Length: 251
Image (cartoon, rainbow, N blue to C red; front, side, top):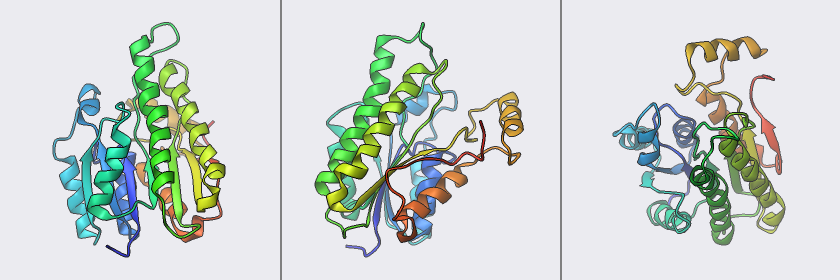
């Protein structure tokens, strides 16, 4: 087994996304990395799927000296989180950092959200988060203080009700781990990155975000990765049970 830590990063469907940048940055910092994706989700979104994204990312991580594996995982299926951990551990060894970047996100509001869509958002964003954290807690055997759980959230709810409300549940589930897994010495934090430029914003939205951000620019996936890599390092080990706004000060 490698002496490097093993990170499981979910929601790595595209090479330009937050999950992809987080995974590569962790590999650069000395982690072996398992990534999960669900191609049907990307295929239904405006950006469409990148057929070669996982191969490109694992090749990039190999060049950085990391072992890596890509696993397709439908997190709306409650049996999948356990299988995802099985596959990651079989390929790379015990997982010591869980970074959850996965989501279901389809724009709709209070009046036009369907029950099917609402349930799918909660299955992926809330239930899968709980089941992943549960698997991590049941399996973790690392040194006290070395385990890390991180999840990405959002406070966008207006006209995005099922996404925002299910992310609110994700917050509470993840933060509970800081207390409930205290006996393992696992830290658990949530990151709210604000609007990040991964290709989904229109030119007008990009302009508005830049205008409303005190630092005068739009957040990037690398901004997210910088924080994740720090929190996963020994230097980030005293930050625990926090919802961290890493958003350039946008209001």
